[in-house]
Image (cartoon, rainbow, N blue to C red; front, side):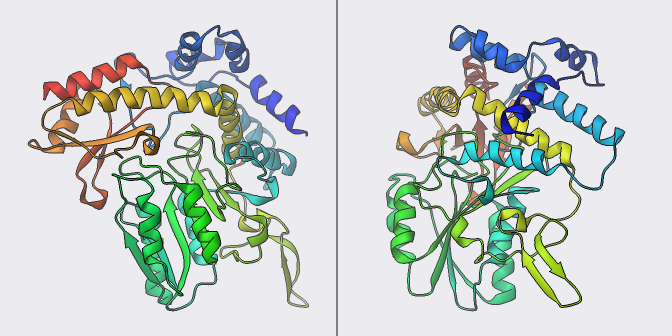
Length: 425
């Protein structure tokens, strides 16, 4: 099946969900791509997008950084694929459809990325573990990261340190001056530095790092450059090649708005033989023979895939990646940032509120983090929750703050609502 045929089939397969009354009504909505074409202006576009989600009218969801919501076309598509999968059970999956999901996902990673550089994994956590455990790091080799990483990066780093004696060097992100992060990384580099592994966007404050400059530094020093993209993929345009990124991974269930337990791993083609697969099985190989004790890994990033998969979930990931790209990553970024900046402007006018996100606008994203200077952050979180506003507490790096994430289903009225409720505490 060709890519164009596959994407077309995604729009056709939007049968009704066997759920509640509100979910059943979603099946009657027109195909999403047709609705996008018919949207005459931005107001009509975002109204159409909002209608594709099943949030209750009195519920404001502002935690996409934790987990994104599935649009109804994606939910319906997964349900139909699951039905077909059970109707004709198979221990394997359709390689053409599988590869088409990868091809669609290359559009999230920027120009020049090849399908052969993509592996479909279960989560960003699995992708991080493949990178950290598959690289030929030896005792005394050093890895640079920040104090603001998600446990999905810190814990595997510490595990490899305990097992193999690598050294972890950390720095506190510079939220005053974005380019200061390049200086802080450079100050930690020495002859034993082998890898710089950071978040593309931090889970703590929504800070985007100066990736082009960091990538150039790593390339000049002969250091591998890896990124945890869990908080960035489908939030903005990306450029793996232009940023000199060697490894990149993200989960499908956040900004991409795909199913849980899906993810993507990108490995620069030239490094496929450097990053050795750790967990392997059927699909990982390019040929093996137990009689002569031979094994060849698959020629592409498929070498990092293995075993029977829940194929409908990954087909759903392809549908979700196509969904956000149909809207357009530039439009998504502009919409989300407009809401985030409105929220940021409202926060800095408040007494007794400290904004923890970057001072420079160019390094802020759709996630803004703050904390009260007098009250406990849990007091504000509890108040917001009682008023059906969902945010996320940030305990990482000892911040004790509140993170607010804005995505395509949010609007300016919700920004006004949360600002009002913060002021009411």
